Image (cartoon, rainbow, N blue to C red; front, side, top):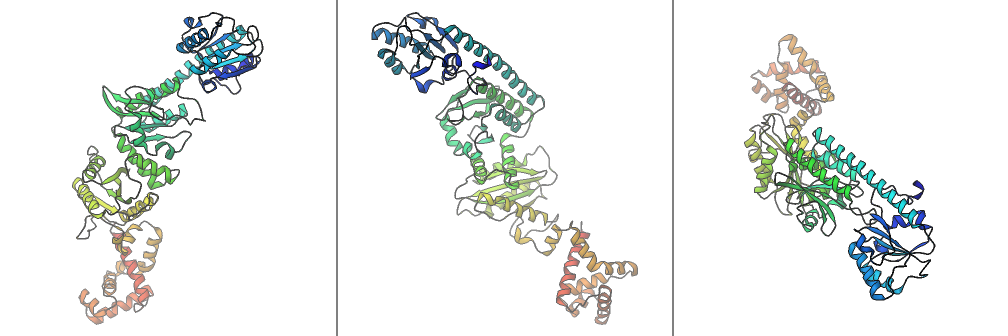
Length: 542
């Protein structure tokens, strides 16, 4: 039987008219397609050999009809009726042997088949019709068995996902892998929350997603619909709809339309997504925001275009917009408070467009999208007020404004540096409630670098001998050095701050110079010591 398979045919899809014509048992008859060439992708459900004048009464649809032409009516009207009946019942094609009665197809037959779009195929040589039926029926039955096995594997795969508590991303990814097609989960406002591309880029799949999705229609049941022929099915539970799963068709040159297995995959996807929604408390929108923000921060997207398409599909403007990255460190929080949703709702109420997601435990990332002339500081002030209302010790850090979505990773890195350079309880500027890059002076820079062994080694090298001397002798030369450096080398001011006589101050400074092998009259050396003393304060404050 394997010898009769069409070239490359692995029966992972329905057997078509073109497939049957390519079988050796039929190709030996030198088949020629006279009409209906665009319809050779019609599936063949059975082969029917007939010499009756009314074969349609014995058909159910999808049959490849084989005839010698002997029963064809003589008159054109009878031929048209014969063809109309075949077309009305849904026959896949009509194959006529040009050996006995005809040596060329009758014009009336050709015209009737052309008008009804029924493929008409002629055979120039004698073909054993019985052998054709045996070969094709064996293939069809084998196809059905294979289809049952594949359906069983599909059910087993999704059952395994459900039993291990897979999240929505795992479910959609599995659907794309099994079907070999792009699969998308969208919410009720037509935002694409999860997209697993297959055979196309994210940009191709998601560009203008909302408009394309709305044009597809609501879709109450699993069906291929809309101008692009999307296969969709609702995701719902007990009458409450949460969104829908969408399978995108392959490009015209990449494969056939959707088949029964695709429908099975998508419906099982919807069922698994329903279970995932019930057992995972995090809302899909929050998960989607988290994933997109992490891709932006870590630059894990395949291309800037893909990143833009993902953001746009979640409702973030990507044209003529400016962006500001904000980090909110909340510290220990009540896990039931859902700070992500609250911040997102408050920002949306204020008219601010944003993505909000948890980047790490206790740390939220917010990407604000601003209109061309919209100032960002009032929005961040409002955001800070929300965060401080939830956690009075929250720290809000802001990166610089950028005009390209590709640069948002830099803005997030800057916000992270600000957060790293902000000690607990760090006072804010009197006119704002957030921290930004311009706040990072020497002390906060050294605080951010406090874990660096090079900073620790530098501090010890500069001041270690003085600290050890104070420890052994019970002196406080370190404080004297601090007063002197804070006074920018003014000995009179330093003596007054330390409550010392000038001569006592001079003596202590000479001791410091001897211990540290330093010239305190040198501006460069005073600067080095001042940096080391600031670092020591930061290290001791840990």
